[in-house]
Image 1: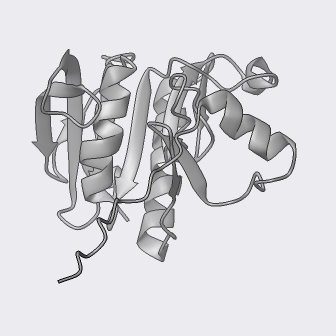
Image 2: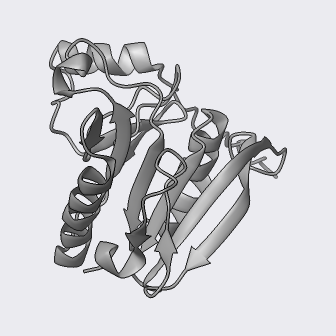
Length: 196
């Protein structure tokens, strides 16, 4: 009786942020290609339906209004999170003005927001662990299906988390509730204002 060959799963190649940026620079990847580097893996971003795009625009408008001068709200642009992650969150708030980031992407956002529909699991588990690992103190997910805002705070190490970190405090806020960013604690965001 012949033995069947042992099949080994195919290997994967992980990338650093420097390698990923180089692939874009030399034209191997188009800078508008729908990819993000998450934990060393190139992940295809999901297409946006109308409600998602509307919510992203609302989030950007609301955050720009409450943060004001001296703060920049970037939408769907890269963040140099660490050596193997360059996500493009739906919104993030950083100090400064546009030209401050001409030569490199921001590294330390004070707030990151993802708008989630089909991506909810990825935003909670994969991206949440990466943002926690990078020390992002304030991470929000606008959950379009449940119509709530999930607020993640207090990053801690966790052997059970995808990338070794998770948030220890999670709060789910209804459309009637308000949230205050940690970096602007006296300003209030109505959850309803973030929903399409």
